[in-house]
Length: 262
Image (cartoon, one colour):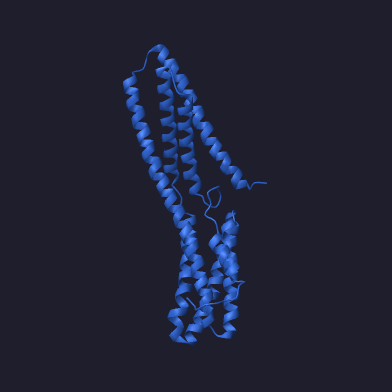
C-alpha cells in the first residue's frame, strides 16, 4: 500500500496536467469559433502569447530555483544536525565515567526523537515531539554543563557541539515551516492557465495545431509546477529530503567507539 501522502502527491500531479490540458482544449474551441467569425488579429495574439509565455518562464524559473534552494537547505540542516550529535557523542569520552553513560543515553534518545519527528504528519504530535526534544536538550545541556563546571579547562571542548545541536533544532523547525507564500503560488498557477489558454486560443484562430507539441508543452508546465510544490513540502511528497544521515548516526551508536574525539 502507498502512503496517503504519496497518493495525494500523484493526484496533484495528475490534476495539474488534466486541468491545464482541459484549459488548452477549451480555448482551442473558443479560438476556432473566433476564426469562423473572423474576429481576431493574429499579429496581436502572437504578441500576447509571447508575453504570457515569457512571464511564465520567468516565474517558473525563479520559483523552481527558490524551491530547490529551500530543499537543499533542509538537506544540509539534517546533515549538520547529525554531525553535531555525532561530535557530542564523541566528546562524551571526556566526561567522567558516571556522567558518560547518562549523556550517551540522552543523545541516543534525542536522535531517536529527531528521527521520529521527521515522519510525523499530525500537527499535535509534532508539537508534543518538539516539546520532548527541548526537554531532552535541557537534560543534555545540564549534563555537559555540570562536567564543564567541574573541569573548566574542558568547557570550550564540551559545550560548543551542544550549543550547535540546540541551534540546529530551531533551524530545522524554521526550515520546515518555510514555504512559498500562497499568493505567489496562486499567481504561478494563474499565469500557467493564462499561458496555456493563449496557446490553445492561438491554435484555434490559426485553424491548425500540433497535438504532440501542445500536449508536451502542457505536460512540461504541469510537471514543473508539481516539482515546485513537491520540493516545497519535502516530508510529504515524492521528492523527499530523507533522514539517511540521522539513520547512519543512530546505527553508529551500536558500534564500538574508536578514534579521537572530534
